[in-house]
Image (cartoon, rainbow, N blue to C red; front, side, top):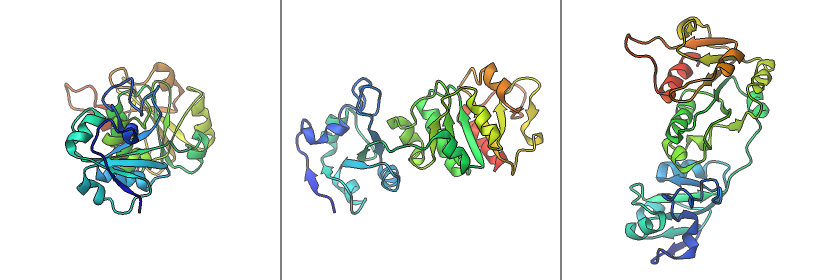
Length: 261
């Protein structure tokens, strides 16, 4: 079992991996920081421990740290007050873990072993991104490919909102856009753009269930670009009641993921 170390001083350098998580330009999980993966709460930390991400250490109140059992890295125990001084806010979940990033598979490698994929364009909101990963895990989507304008799925907020599922659903950047969609098509995927635009096919009538499908999802508000929609094999829409023109992107993703399962 890793050493359990009491921390009484919030300035202790041994907990620098967890410092100032509320300050955007100093956060270790943001560009310009150390690129660390930060997990919050017992459930998410447990998923981090089950992932390929190399854990560096833990910080928490004693009962939360002890709930995790044997740990592979130093565990720093502090009062809730000292923890709040370190991280910059009060943490209701009582425990954090920090990990280095793992080597991610390529988009082509993910596609080779997949039947259902989500392909995102311009999803820059961390909470929407985390929710999409949680929905993907729950509804059997095999991987997520990130087009231009997407946030880093390993930002702390995305990891938290995904309930740690971003650590288990494979993801990769699709560097050529929208040319990378041709790679998916060559591997047997039907590329489907989700859009409320007139002329799109009703989701239930698109015949997607059971086939190899890559679903294109766009940003909140603008949705997919014309370039992305034009590059798809078919455009589909979710039918809605009068007076409602769209859904939150994560909610729409869940509806489509269920429809193609």
